[in-house]
Length: 395
Image (tube, rainbow, N blue to C red):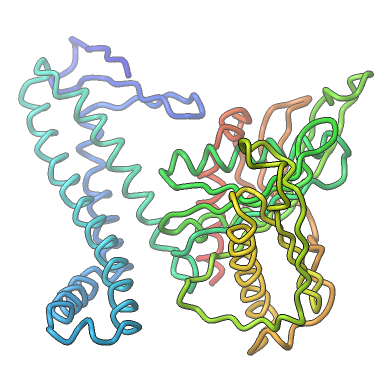
């Protein structure tokens, strides 16, 4: 951020250039920021109403009182549910209170910057303003995540589609994109299975993104992703269109009981194919589980033992079947039947252009980014946020 003092203006009218990730520069001054504050205050008030902040604070006090009772720990199931609710509300209330503090601090900083433009407070004030505006927008988006499973971890599966080696390379590029996004959000990623392709890229990958609202955000990424570029695997360097599918499901809570008949499962073990230390490739530790009624196949190979891989694969399968049962409006898993092994997608949700232009376009919301390289480095919040806003408006 650079500064350029205009001597012909009042002392507090200092010009600041703020550059965003897209490379666009916005000119701000303290007087302009002061004018914007009333609008931000109104947005903060609307957020409090939308999230029912007063009721949440009252409920938190009730839960705290309950947890202090002597008999509180007697019922494990009730205790677990209550503590989960308490933690969720604490996170929301703390985030909102932090946002209020940011706004109040910003008001004080504006006053100081106005009093003395040479104090150096101008830079700090602009930075604080930009941070508050971003944090407010982030919390407004998070408040849209009110689905039953939105707060859960996300299980993501990527499959290469039409396009041969280019599609397999594309699937690996998408895997990196999501892992970079998760890293930026301070989420934890667990990679359970990667099926490497023969020449380049991957045929498939399954991983879990662990953190608050991981599923709520990533559910918007479910669908076909299209790549358009000059193929590095084509001797003539021709333009190539490739496809990869992304499937996202919530990781079910350990306390959720899902009954699957043993007769409905075929469990195969095989030797892991990827890198993973001395243990990998020496024993048949990888596990493939097929749910026979639906033909859904889940694999896991990245844990050290066959037992661990089977446990993870079963957890992923249960999550998939539970999500499928909800989509099909079935009361129990036994009612599920048919070939669900292949996900059917009507159309691609997003296109990534590397040639002849460089841009990314979401076909559902019409959101676009001109910086394809930033997107591939994990900067996908624009598309996630616009899809969440669209769903909220439609609801």
